[in-house]
Amino acid sequence: MNEFDIEDLTAHLNHSEFALSPPATEPHVTLDIPPQLVWECAAGLEEPASIARRFGFEDEKWERLSQWPPFITAVQTQRSEFERNGMTFRLKAGLMAEEMMAMMFKQAIANDTSVMQKLSVFNALTDVAGLKTPKEDKNAVANAAPKFSITINIPQGSQPVTIDG
Image 1: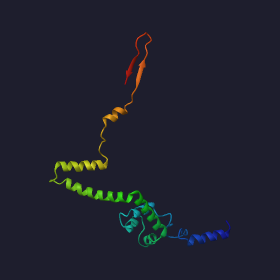
Image 2: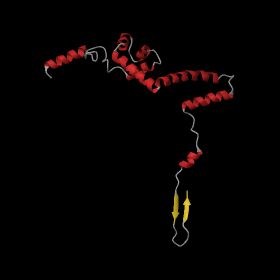
Image 3: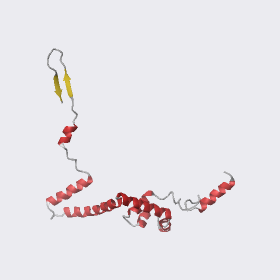
Image 4: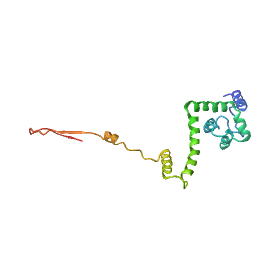
């Protein structure tokens, strides 16, 4: 590169919103935004400022990011995708189920709860946790077993013998 090209490149880097000059104290805006931050903001399960704090975006840094058009577009695009595939509904339903599970458990272990109610909650919790052993289908096991047949021909004029397995 000639000297003119380097000066143009340096000027562009110093004045572009997509990149900062090397000695800048702020991180590179486009590369340092974790995708998880966009995902969690789009999910809408908590305040975006709280989410941003967990990722190190506080005060002025969050203000700038929250007003930056590419970030806003990324969050809106992700939110649309979540709504299109039902993820928003499933996320909120999962959050509600988790809250309800804690309440159900407290009620289930109370002394005045019947054994059948306790068993019902126990079965629901083990089912959700994936701790239940799958029920064995005897027909499926019988059909899944390999079948074979062996035929032995004895040359002395006797009838062939077939053994089925």
